[in-house]
Image 1: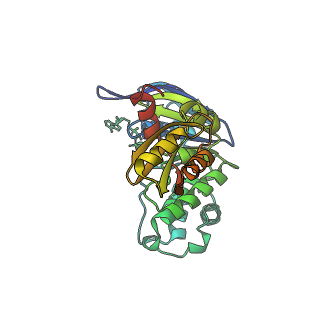
Image 2: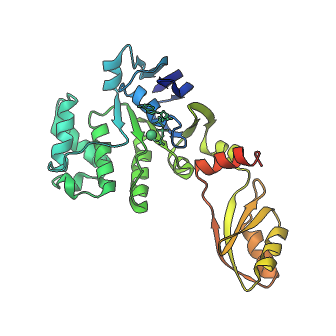
Image 3: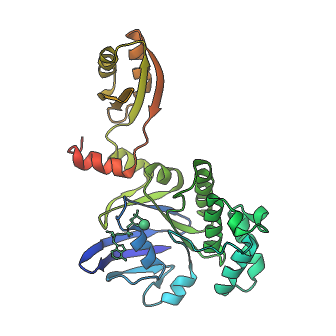
Length: 306
Ligand SMILES: Nc1ncnc2c1ncn2[C@@H]1O[C@H](COP(=O)(O)OP(=O)(O)OP(=O)(O)O)[C@@H](O)[C@H]1O
Ligand SMILES: [Mg+2]
């Protein structure tokens, strides 16, 4: 498990972490969610022993990351923001090498097991240079898992890979939660919702909110937004119909269509479709808009929390 108590970290006069506390129990997947510069990487680097905190404490499986650093490090696997990989080694060679560095007793079987966990066993003879970005990311994951640590810490594991592979990596991370305590960072709220049991939201080096994705969604969202495109009505007539639809809090033109925000807890899509149809038009697109965490913060801060 992971315990973080009142962690502070300054870089010169800048404060990156300002009293962060949270915990992750064994078998739990916890998402560390926050916009750029929130302090996610700083938190993870402290937890993995790469850097000490300015003050506060952190423990991995009961071992203090500063006072008992070696024991703490043995219990944790880390996928950093950028994993250094050796392009001319085979996948299996690479992971076996890491296993040796980690002092694993039977490096090759351990490498095979890690490769199975991340679904790369079939590619074990391939050269690292021939792997796609998503596969490289999974190879990085294998590296983090090869000594079978109880705690796994992953810094933005899905960044920079294509959508199909993002889904695979998310599934892998979720599956890891069955055997490991997992802390992973992201700035994508929907990703956190899909993968995590619990979410800790960091903003400006502080915990801004914490809870299950469901409870956070209810607290943070002031109503879901949908993108709507209409045919057969003038823009004015379409806007009028949308604004009059049941459950609609707000409707504004946006590009060739409209953005509609529903009142809290209302799925406005059937109401929007019905209202447009009754006005004599046709809805040709009705798409939920996925808010990023940045959007939510902008919404909360910029518009007075409406
Ligand atoms: N080595 C450093 N020296 C000085 N300031 C730093 C250093 N590393 C991070 N910071 C600052 O600390 C703050 C937190 O950075 P951190 O990298 O932890 O954020 P993050 O949440 O991981 O962001 P991102 O989503 O962009 O990866 C930022 O303001 C950043 O500029
Ligand atoms: Mg980061």
